[in-house]
Image 1 (cartoon, helix red, strand yellow):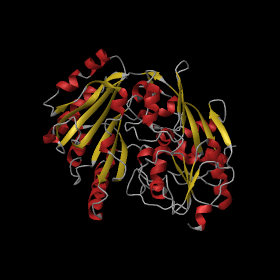
Image 2 (cartoon, rainbow, N blue to C red):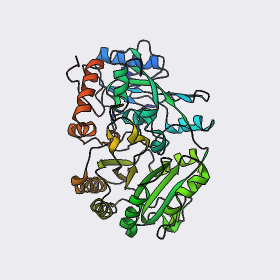
Image 3 (cartoon, rainbow, N blue to C red):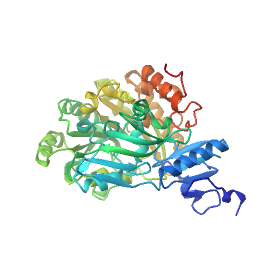
Length: 465
């Protein structure tokens, strides 16, 4: 045992993990297996008081701070070299108030934890489309998911947050308490503190919904996208849609002969009565000649976790993304041309449809600014950890070339989709000048020394008068 295994954090009742500890390698691993960093200490917290103690310890020792919730951010900002990881992964409790229709969620919870607890009461809030995504990271960046057109983004459903500030103090942020901090937390990322718990508004959803993907052959991509563009124009708010372009994943419910065949999929989830949902997706299911049609009544929790195995922990990932000015014929042609050029059968692109409640929220109500976006795209390069570096180089080059081809049609970017090599100009691009300036002012108030900078960082600006 080395001297470093005896680190003591005053006031901390969680677990302290350092190199040499049997849990160290597992504790420093994050979703993206391409990220390999070695922190000096990992402080696995049990309650918010532990978070505060860890922040104060880090400040006293002048340690780099990384904050781990679900550890799912593609850039790997949840772990740092030679610093401290404030690890919330043991803080996953979810408490539901079915009368008030709210959920109190600890900062290390995953969306599968939230869905499991809330669906017991036939309730849900907008969460990610992969159930092992962390609640904290997704929420602080904005929060897009199947329910956003009906019930708004995750940040639109956030009622309050318990926040540990850069001084190691615990503050409550809500519409009435620290409203400037509350505004910034809803889209500004992890720049302003560590959230120990969130309280969300819940809505009646499920337990059974009409959901699932329809796949068509890759050569039908342009025709499918043109149909889709018209199909979603007048879609009801209850209908959430995500397009996936790549290969058919090797899921047990799909015939093995179709596994890894290049294809476009339109996946849907209707957050309303089953009979209405069946009518809403009828035209989609009848278009062209589908290879696979998996749309039907399903449990919402099963749909939420349906693609978990297609993006498992430990694979190597690299992302490029942009909001789109529209789904014009030119954009469709670019997408159809580039989507299937990846060498890895695990790489894909995904397009999200917005509008509905997302667009109706006032533009300045939160720090998330993409209210007028109709579609965005994230280009996800993925390859196996045992494959050599040349495979990763090919996949990252594909993602960059794809994004470059869309240059004339870019309109900002969703901050949660930024990868590690996206520079500070892309962080500003995610917010626009006015919102970025306002966020920098809030940063100057709550974290003037930029203690929380292992994130999509917004440096402190000039404090507002």
